[in-house]
Amino acid sequence: MKISIIGAGNVGATLADRVLRERIGDVVLLDLVRDLARGKALDISDAAPLLGCENSIVGTADYENISNSDVVVITAGFPRKPGMSREDLISKNRNVVEAVLTGVKRFSPDAIVVVVTNPLDIMTFLAYEFMGRKRNRVFGMAGNLDTARFKAILSEELGAPAGSIETFVLGSHGDTMVPLVSRTTVSGKPLKEILKAEALKKILERTKKRGGEIVALLKSGSAYFSPSAACLEILKAIVNDEKKTIVCSSFMQGEYGIKGCAIGVPARIGKGGIEEIIEWDLPEEELCELQNSAKQVKDVLNQYAL
Ligand code: APR
Image (cartoon, rainbow, N blue to C red; front, side, top):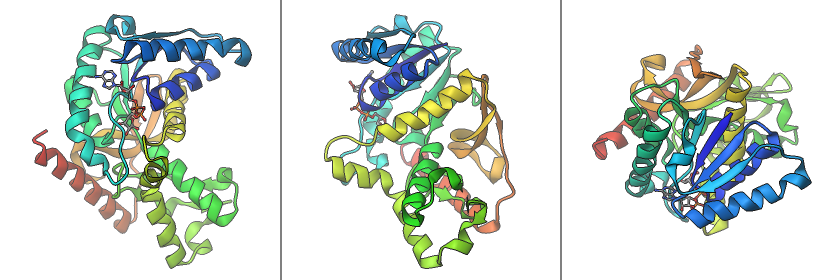
């Protein structure tokens, strides 16, 4: 597989390193700043003899190098600063993502495109439109990151291994995300039987604000270890045709009563990208939360006339 990663910053370069370590494909790492991409690619490839990586990596600023990619991951764009919401990035990152998509459309129009740049659901919608409305092949990474964060916080609070926790977080990659408490179990036991309402509320709040918590601590830049790991999970599902259920931001065509925006829903991911949007029978309250989350995304699309 040829995997092109646009943006050689924190998320892009860490993802490139993860892809090589997992031996799932050859990597082209592209950045507007050519020497940054070249330097990071050289550094990552120098680690190959130590880590036993066998695939190649090339750093470039030239879109011709991404020709015939199987997958293109878009991480180019500005990260948040302390106090910023993801929506504060719209104007700047819209220009970046449109410039990137122009190159992708020219040199790799049939690639599966995975969007990582924030605000995620808005940028995914832009990419979906720009690339010709192929929702199975153009989608966004965030729901599995939010799910991982929820699991990590639960694991810490309950002293339970993360692997014993089953859950999914749907909705927008922002404050209105929807952790599916109704589907959350710890070693098979429903979460609602384990935690009191007040304790649960605090954990849900912390999950929703986790990205901001990290931004505030870093002071410059935003999270990248977990976003790159979440993106890797999607790439592995594509490359190995896993048919795995992963929450991805997908353009909605009436599923869950939502139309006309991209939002995080469970999807079966395999070599064709999104092979199916999975519609669960959600309790009324969670369905309303999901629809409300979608409404907020649509309001932002309208506000920016997107
Ligand atoms: N084309 C290619 N690369 C670009 C362009 C462009 N038009 N504009 C910016 N870049 C590159 C920058 O040069 C930089 O190297 O994108 C990279 C972004 O890297 P970082 O600033 O380290 O940001 P990062 O932490 O990787 O986050 C990137 O992912 O998670 C989201 O919110 C985050 O939107 C942000 C994105």
